[in-house]
Structure formats: C-alpha cells, structure tokens
Image 1 (cartoon, rainbow, N blue to C red):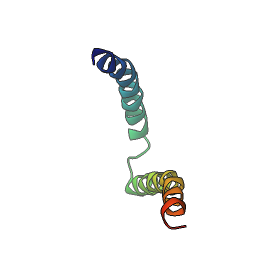
Image 2 (image 1 turned 120 degrees about the horizontal axis):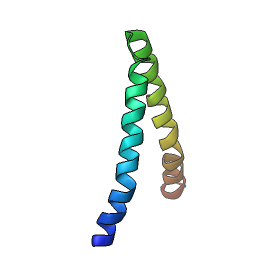
Image 3 (image 1 turned 45 degrees about the horizontal axis):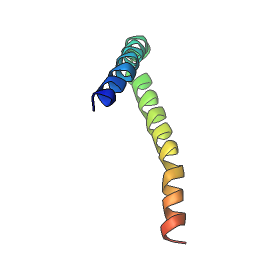
Image 4 (image 1 turned 30 degrees about the horizontal axis):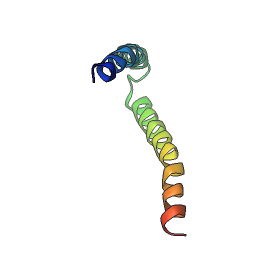
Length: 64
C-alpha cells in the first residue's frame, strides 16, 4: 500500500508543477473575454474528441 502512495507522490508533484506553470503562462493570454471563450471552446472540443473513441467502442461492443 505504501508503494502506491509513493508512486502517486512521484507522479503527482511534477504533474502539479507543470499544471501550475501552464496556468500562470496561459493567464497572460486569457485577459479578454474573447480569448477565454476561444480557449474554453477549444478545451471542450478536445475533451469531446478524446471521449469519442471510448463511446464508439462501447456502442460497438454492446449494440452490435
């Protein structure tokens, strides 16, 4: 059990640092409402595209 926690710490802290750095950097570009909307739509599109293969696989598996 301790190995799982250790693995989490090893992975989580560098990931958190990268995420925080990205947030600080992107803050400079998202000052206007227009840029915020474009960013939000882009992230929503990427999220939707990333979920589509899983949904397609589930439909093929259970419907067909």
